[in-house]
Image (cartoon, rainbow, N blue to C red):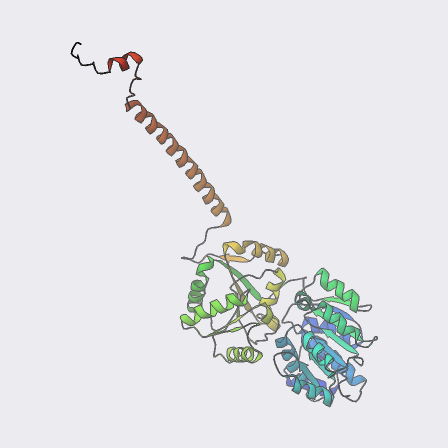
Length: 440
């Protein structure tokens, strides 16, 4: 389905052409029309399928259909996102869609000074993209008011719930207009997401573009079984052998990311990290250097998983599997985007086998397992058999040693002579005879 068939405003259509948009992705084809009609939506579609355009284009068109003058500190549309990277990314995308429109767009997020953001709000803005935390800060300072918000989008709603933003989101939505239109987008479904949708959506329509909690069909998944202590060695070998150049690597903790960075730097591999302890500026520089091919490896944690938009990324490596299987879908959503092919490679230690089972159960598939020569690792079953064998051998050895000890003690006893007990007679006889004395 072509964008040109939507009968959009001429300047909006012109911007889409400038952005290189011609044919809609499945989520865009299913969501744009009902959203443009004012319908509340709950949309489930994996990352990288074009969700930003799916909600931004109908909202921009609706705002054009009912034009209003921009007002100081009173936006008409609000888009909430879980991370600063994602807020910035969405802001850039929607600014491009609205480049020829009489509508102003701004993104609010932490890690930068609030003064510049406050000035933009004071000048009047039509659409605000923000993280919940930064928006609450601006509200507390009186920099923005939400009573005129007619359109609300929750992007990556599942991630916002995972990060503990549920109460903040509900608080913010209570400040918006009662007759607002609300669109909820998520990559996965869960009881928490469904509960939130019933709280904030009215007579909503559900759209599921792909099988629930599935990954893009364009991604090839493989697993390398490897000991935890040898993961970095395997990674270095695969980089060299398979000529991986731009690789996004996920770890589960900041400490793991830092250790991996130190190991790669020792091996003279150009790499950088992107996690919550890094400043916004440092994260921006790392991402910019990675996009410009100055870095071979970008290491990220879960926090950064939703905010990284890298065109043409071929490889995503799970150096450590995520604890939540849904996070696997989010991570690998960085590759295989918009119909392009991609590769998801996971390093799985023996301790992570249960996490792998949960991921495969969620996705409804078995991921191809590769055994790299020289990096073989014993399976859990063989490990248990080995342990059992060692226990039995240990018991047998102990029993044998006990028998030998008993035999030795028996032989030693037979060789020892016991002294006879002394009798009264022998004692008397043993007394020395008295010397004969002179007679008186």
